[in-house]
Length: 79
Image 1 (tube, helix red, strand yellow):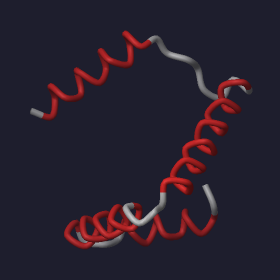
Image 2 (cartoon, helix red, strand yellow):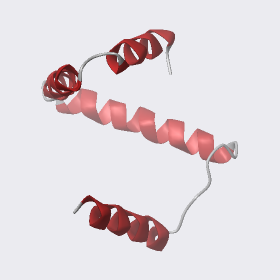
Image 3 (cartoon, one colour):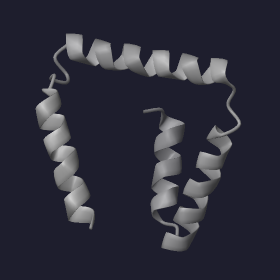
């Protein structure tokens, strides 16, 4: 994570809940303006980053069964 991003995150944590929600909304809306080529490049970069982290042992693979089970559990907890 970049230093600038870390600074933004720390500032955002001190905002009111309403202001944080508004900030999130504006950031997401900004992503809607990314063209397909930019979006594809971002996904390629993210996939490359994750593969590198896997290769170095920083993260471990999980079975799809485990991933889906955990996702279902979280969804149930949200209800």
